[in-house]
Length: 230
Image 1 (cartoon, rainbow, N blue to C red):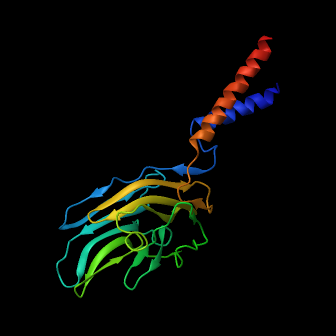
Image 2 (tube, rainbow, N blue to C red):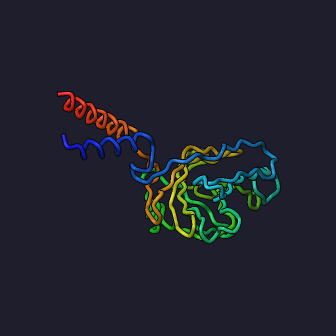
């Protein structure tokens, strides 16, 4: 048995099994707590530090004024860049008539410098407020706005792609969520820990692969011990 092979095989698999960055660079992260708010609530918000460096990257907020006026907001969910970061921290979306809207994407969509082809028209753009989804009454007519209320029906899980800045470098990530009347349900999130590198919506390190490598390393170790005893 080659001692170097044994040494590096065990060390590599041990690192993978321990959950380090040795297996790829997709980092799974905690999502914010779900929003569940009652009609008549002005605004509820929460900060999100994507990479746990103590710096807020995005702010989610939810308005549920439940307006009964001929024109007014019924409910509105937003994913906004942290204050002062609109030039670097941006969800993928499109520009509406009055505000910028985040787009809702399917699993497997590639997020990076090149905008996804489907749905078309998505890009990163500077905005202090980016609306995930909303319902608005205009001249007495109810309408839905934003990818999480138009591209998919309210309450349907989908992925938002985003980019954020760390020490002058750009990183890409995704967050899976659903938006509906009175709620944002956060499901999962991850980012690619290599700067300027694409990430696939829903991508995570595969536990089966890690376990298999750990088992393989244990086999290599046992084989080496048996040879030494022989």
